[in-house]
Length: 403
Image (cartoon, rainbow, N blue to C red; front, top):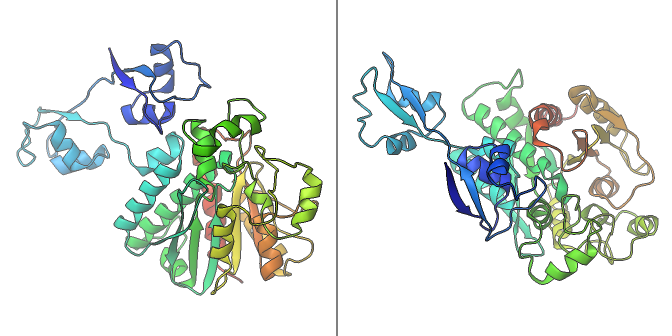
């Protein structure tokens, strides 16, 4: 049996799969007109295979709340799915329907993580962990909030950002996954695989900007649905026709990692791209784009950050220098991050105008571009579990502070 469903704005096939607890292959089989690389377009009617009910038979010593915990569903959802069951009077042999439930972790690991998912995640985490701080640092071209979220109370200040490039949105999910793990272990006074979260909290302060480029991320994930005044232009700017999965720029076709005032003119001349494009066009000047300005202004205020990390994908490399502006300790830091993650520390040349370049030049402090994972962007989500270990190792090492 299938359920008819009209695709809504913001849907992707993976998000629909996650919501209904089915596999993508099942949806493709039920809808032979859909190709695996199609975007989910609002208004289209599809058929979703009906998920068979998950039935649990109550055992001796079971309690209602233990069953809810075991299946990772809220107790209220379990109660709603079993309206005739008294939670305080379970009987061995009694059958319970276990409802399908997704949490933030599932959203990050099993479907495209976009601006809506990020805002839900930030609001949920700050409500659950009151010691987290959130701040809107700017807005995108299309008016989406650009958010920062902080944890820690120590003097050593670390900044990390993600999704500067649109199709590298996995970095946003990875940063938020780290934040939740850190907050959870800190709240429950637990070490995290040997990492002392309370010591880190008192030693360091971490501020994340998980998604610098929300408009671009949405475009890469959903294609052109309704992108306002740029709908017509985007098709002409895109080198790949109607497929925006390789798009890195913001919604105006400006590469945000070519927007910073660090030998911007030289990077413009090297790129030799004079109009909006999916990547590598640095705009008419440095800092013309609101997303770049928001990140610049956030970092360029006292107290300044002692170390900055910009997460990109892919390559499993760490770029740590810039035109000899980097301080002497940058190489030691690069080697520490290399040992922690297994990534290769690379001394880079012939690249300017990136966030890392500007940070090093402006503050003479350690700054890094971290290229996570390996493959073709957007990286497949089956890499998430492995990459999150590597990203966590890098952030944990950074929060240990100077030695």
